[in-house]
Length: 242
Image (tube, rainbow, N blue to C red; front, side, top):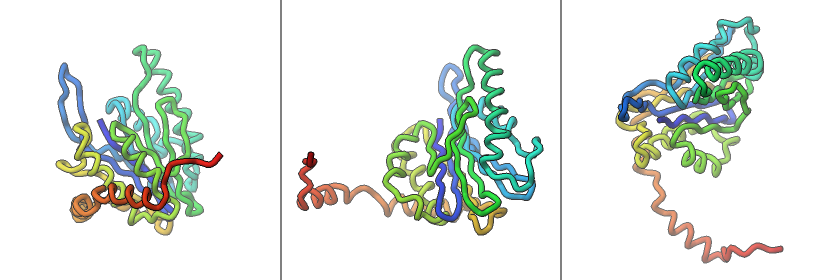
């Protein structure tokens, strides 16, 4: 059980997730793990990968796609990595597991990196190896609420610095209402890369986490009723012209 979020910003990418895992052993057993993995292109640019779904399937899939195991050029773009490594390797992995056990693997990935020309790129990768380039990606049991919030935000004007705390805030907010998401008690992992420093990986610190907890108290939906009232008073009848 999980909430993983990826955001494409105007100056980089951010990927974060909670740490809660739920294993089924005739009952649910909770444990904790980092769901954010990093690889590197040959020139040192980091590739950030967030994983959700069945943990065993996701871990096995991650071993299939380490870019260092394949003859990619050092200056490869993320789409090149997706097309020549991720898609074919995970497609074969999908077919192999489906044939071996009668059902396909159950996981999804969000992958982000800065291209050689400085452009940030983010993709959602599905269990069969197919992928979509995205402005944002949400996955796991908390994805619907995270998706709802992110759809209302102009992400193309968002900076990495703000997006790091936005992702942390959403994970913490969902943790308050969903028993299978926990980014508060045992913390969260949020990684980012900016396009002006494409080889520098930004990690969430304890001080950053404390800021998220502060934001959780200060930013609430308590003024939502007054906003609704204001819209209605300004002529929000809900009627649409034909």
